[in-house]
Length: 188
Image 1 (cartoon, one colour):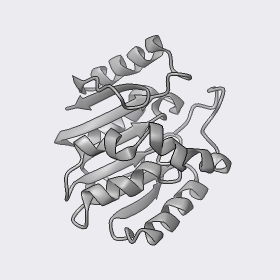
Image 2: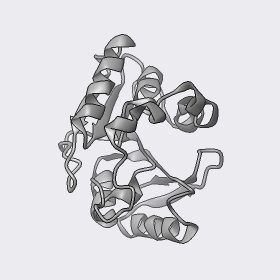
Image 3: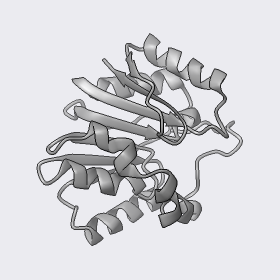
Image 4: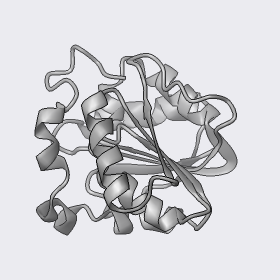
């Protein structure tokens, strides 16, 4: 789900090495970013998962009773997620899912305890449509952490996206600091 008019488009699978490396862990540690919102047994969605940088750690947090749906447009990114899930013995927890530009495409039977959209909402074609789909995938007590990059998304643009989320029925829960960008925690 990307916006073709966005200058950078979606981050190509050719740049996956920049999305998952030890240097990034120093600044954007998945346990610190997502850990406070994931409990053992949770169902988790990693939207725009890329090579699985967050998916692997979130699967470890959700544990054997949990599920992580790693969602991305690019088959090459999802292949990397599969490789990593095999290497980390998480294949029973992680489910890769290819979405389209317009549709997340997970069935109505999927209801998440936690959803992460890290550096990707600004790339969607229609923020309102995308956020409505995200809302439909959440459990009533679920949490949705949206983080957008400071270098691509101005404060004004971020606040427009947050307003769109509120217009689709989300409730602002928190503006957690230290998440690596402009961040908001939403509920329904």
